[in-house]
Image (cartoon, rainbow, N blue to C red; front, side, top):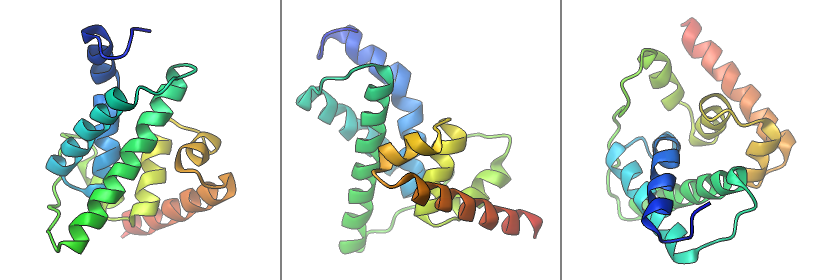
Length: 154
């Protein structure tokens, strides 16, 4: 791993995690512009805090956790200030219909669906990232699947 703050380190982090963090923030905020702002803020927090990571999995988990918290804080701040969050789908996806159904789910379900299916995390790993019991994550995932089945069958 490269040292914090070097061009090599920043380039590696941005190339490796930008897309994943952007999609995670978008799953919460439903706005490309806001998601991009969140990702930029997360990278700034990474450089300023300089946390020590055991490995790349720990690094990614930290970045996802900070992304989720920052996105939630932005959403709370926007609702307090009565600012509208735009709803748009930023990614050209062959399964755009499925993505729009996923995005219509409540945030608690969107997040676990995104982390499980799009990021490839296990229930145990999601529980660690979200700081929830694994049983809660499993329940949310099951409920999200049921909601998706109902929406897709219609």
